[in-house]
Length: 225
Image (cartoon, rainbow, N blue to C red; front, side, top):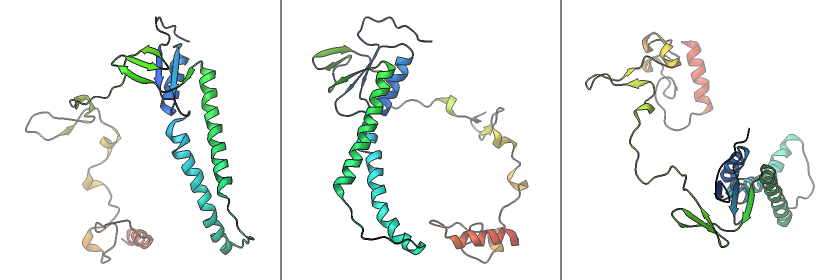
């Protein structure tokens, strides 16, 4: 059920920037009955859709086709002469981005959000300006230059009984509280000195990523012991 907002302004919410976050926030507010407007100077969808994730992936896919073709020869595939056209790739990329821009535009229209083309600027602490129009605003951002004090409610699962005592679990514990003590839990691997292999994952710490042979030795080691 939509809520009716009582306001003397043109809009209940004025969003600067039609990126993914701005579009989502505007649509959600409009779904609750707010009068919403979005100001965007360039393109709908923000950085990810237009100059970030999406075009990067399209160009990356295009580069991988050549490598995949070379690898496919060992699997019985054969091809004729290979040719690449840069302009065709760019045209396809632009076509896909325009399609996504249209999707975002349709979402705004269907939600009843007004899209205003242009660059909106904050001219005063509570005023935004766009194409000669002035919009009263409230900066509803939680960011601050000051470091917030630590909230004791965020210390989930632990508390201090006295100044000298160590941390102890609270009465309300999660699944980890039902685990047996470390001494009574079965060990996945024996002690370090029981295995002569220096690269065993269960016997000594190892720097860097383990190799497949290390995992093979680890499984054999656990089965043997």
